[in-house]
Length: 155
Image (cartoon, rainbow, N blue to C red; front, side):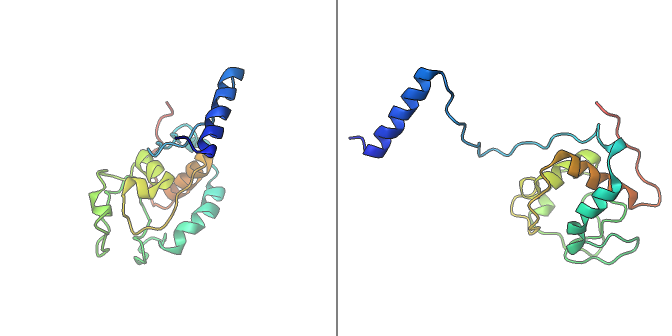
């Protein structure tokens, strides 16, 4: 037996179908991959990245030789081995991250959705959804080095 609400929904779906209108799509439970930032890094706004990156500094130090805080120091992170900051106790979830280095690609994926990259991570940061904002932050992170890593070639 159909409930009145279900009947109303079926009637609306039939009407939309007859008029050629599409039903709204329900968001997938599968996380989407982050859009690549490779083509944006060469012209990214480092100043804007530093401003957005202030959120990182709530838990991470960014100075050369800076102490670990709630999170590890981010100095010289681009192309640094993942999980390699001496003395920092990484969470069990983070230890399962399969990336070998913090490449531009890995930083982009992590910044897009940390909890998707390390389910159960103790890092409570939701991520940076706008592609240009991620490019700006990654360009800023690149400057946190005595010898910044070469930029990737745009695809």
